[in-house]
Length: 96
Image (tube, rainbow, N blue to C red; front, side, top):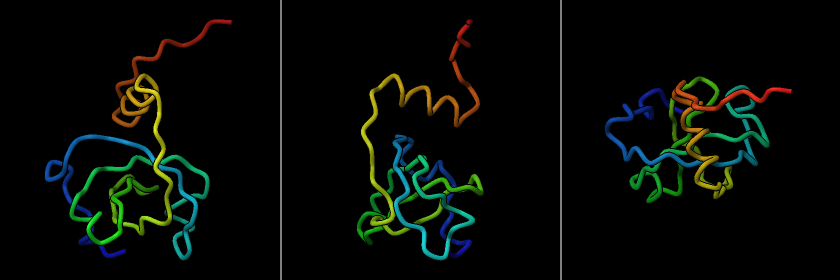
């Protein structure tokens, strides 16, 4: 992927969703198979059969859509994951 494929998040829809990586040929250091990644809505990327993913670098890049399975999570879980990604987790630790 080219460096110029990363765009500031303010230029995209802020809706956050998640996808599981199912392929990563040539990108083993950037994408881990079976790992959950933040997917950022990008209608321009969708027109080219790509998805915008926040990879292991912490930056968002375009990858082939066929490399990911978008998953639908319960709203509470998605909210918690978004909070974890942004460092604002509202989770209360469980006490044993």
